[in-house]
Structures are given as C-alpha cells and as structure tokens.
Length: 115
Image (cartoon, rainbow, N blue to C red; front, top):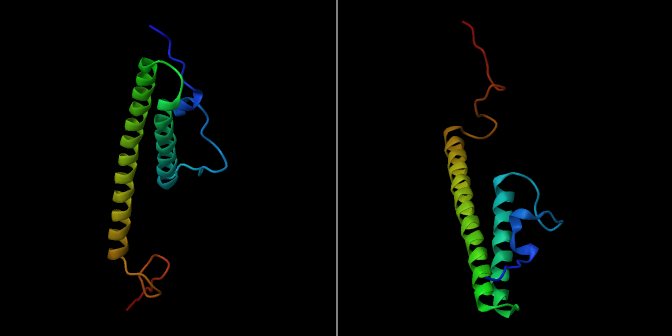
C-alpha cells in the first residue's frame, strides 16, 4: 500500500489559521466565521483533488479525509449557530421584559419615598 502524502493545507487543525484576513477573537460570531472559512478552503481542496497527481486510490483517500474534516466542521458550525440563536432569543426575551428608555426602572434610577 502506498503512503499518502497530504499537503499541509489539508489539515487545518494542525496548522496555524491566523492571518490578517481572518477575524480574531473567541466570540461566537468570530468562531462561526472562522469555521465557515475553513469549510470553504477544504471544499476548494476537495475540488482540486481531481486535478492533482497520484493514483486514484490516493485521491480517494485524500477526498475521504477532507470530507471527514468538512463534516466535523459542519457539526461544530451547527452547534455554534444553535448557541447563537439561543443567546439571541434570551436577549430578546430580556429586552421584552424590561422596557427601554429614560423612564425604564433600573438600579441607577430609583426614587425612595418615605411617608
């Protein structure tokens, strides 16, 4: 069986993914963007396998590895999107409960009345 030589770019978890074009930070929006960009890169690599040199068996194995990575990233993306939707829903519920504006009650805007 021939050894498979994968290009370093086909293993995004093993390489540094920071570049000036990618968003930095750990908030959910940044994570969603990074994962989406990784999926796009892997999809492009998957398309380019057909044009690469090597045996059909090697190409098939490379394609399977890349597809597994895409599947894992899609699962992470779906989980982050669910968490973001839950967070957004929670914020909407809280803002609906508390009225906004100058007359909204808050700890900073209270009047003590003694009789």
